Image (tube, rainbow, N blue to C red):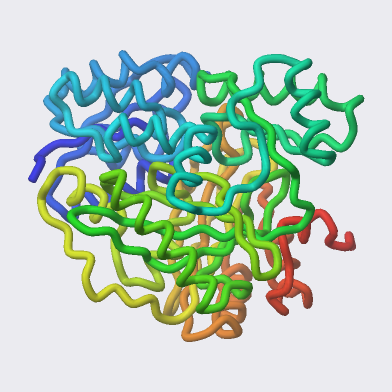
Length: 434
């Protein structure tokens, strides 16, 4: 077992990793930008190293700064967290080449799966149905127009190295293509240091369903999550299991996913994402890392996924037997709508309630990074119980000094359409305003 680990990330996910490492007896080293010096992950870690100015391009995305921080503090491993460099094969390769353990799949596997274009090709090889789209990245506007015309509008432009809704643009007519292509490429470059994009046919209102995978000496599926409630491709609510997946579809999805991850020699946590229309599903992408919404799967399976990641990637042994999802879990992302300082924080409690956050009284929410400041997760025997518990927990949550989306989440939880379970990714944009 490793003794010291660097967390190449910030915020809530860094706090989450620190907590598991402490329980495992692993010392942690946090990294932070100058703006993040008072962040909770810096306060909780055993050591902390400043790696640059507030913009992530000068700090959290600078590979050499992260590697030197790990080496100079005697770390044996690097956990990339989510976003930033978590699916960057070159970063994983550099970590490995400097004699450190990368808590994630091998760089060669990331190149196949972390790159969304290559992942589509890989999925086809294992017989998984793929959403119609370009065979590779599109180099310029002329190639994009030709591809879009062949697929038929509407289409969606996606970042090849993307995730979290970054670098994505829906295009409904040829006149919109040029501007949206430039915007998608620029956003992809800013967020992932890779401006490559590809194009798919846009499905208007599918379900977004993903399987949580954990792989060591064997491959296990920790059930599926439904992440269809989204605003501008950013997830708002996730639940497990999905109300739109029956046992037959679940078996077909799982069979193909396990085969692909096993034959690729995947290691650690990963997520395979599908778009579901009726009784059909299409492979969309693989997130070759842990997901923000992993607590939903943890709650139904009773497993610490971060711990499983570390065990799988350090060769310490990981038992994936006797995993049986039970009950229903749901997560609401709490987003800050504008920067501000927390002057009062009351955290929900009670049976089956969990609150993962970077907040504390006196903390100032920064304008430089993702707006998510907390995740409220509940678990209950069934969906109706989870809905009631989430509503109760949301009403208990108090965050003063920072305006959040708590009230909007309460509206969704109480909405008859959402409670029916019959909705897709267009649900949020079709919600009636007050």
